[in-house]
Image 1 (cartoon, rainbow, N blue to C red):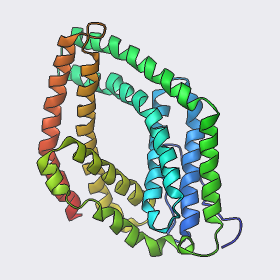
Image 2 (cartoon, rainbow, N blue to C red):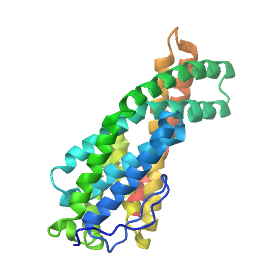
Image 3 (cartoon, helix red, strand yellow):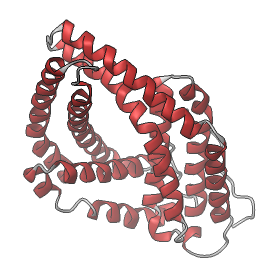
Image 4 (spheres, one colour):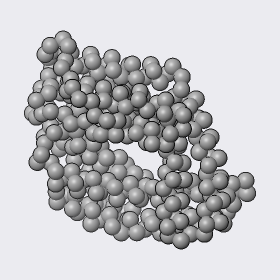
Length: 296
């Protein structure tokens, strides 16, 4: 491999998934994924710190896709990859609370209003939730607005560039040769999914959801037309499980607001009951989505 790896030229928009040509060496492909993610983080960080909800969402997506890339190529990566994944996980955690309150205020309450919940109760939840969102954004700014963020990004790029310039070892193998085994490995981590869905344990469902999202991200990144059917099924299953997670989060956040200083217990209980009903509905739909996913 040449000392200066050739990276696919057209950088995708921050919200777009990067397609990895099958003829790239694995190390260069990983670098392309990291570069796309870092570019998205750098573009959206100022907007997120200024309070733009969609920028926070795009940053979380970029972090998730980079972690999915590390998970995809894990069998051919050195042990130092674990530290990079932990650093990305830290960024995701810093962004998480702000994003949760954004979804609660902009999506959850709108859906509850469309279902006919009391406007008075929703107004109380919106006022109290707005205060919580401001606190979450303040904490996010403290964690991401300083030099530590720049150091994390620089370390990711330096590490990825080092791997891409290796001229021997598994990272020099082409993506098309590695992809089947790498995807099968991610698929094997979903074994027992049917039983997990049937049991309904919230924590196990959350772990299954993360693994499905990683498989979805990895499949999206591999430029292969034959994947379309499985990718569609994977997306639908991921979205179904995401709806369950959103309902669970909504109930958790509503309970936090159910204090005398917040929205009060009655509005919080009303929204919690609504969220529980949505979660039950989505759980009933989940086995069918799982069957279609496994068939694909």
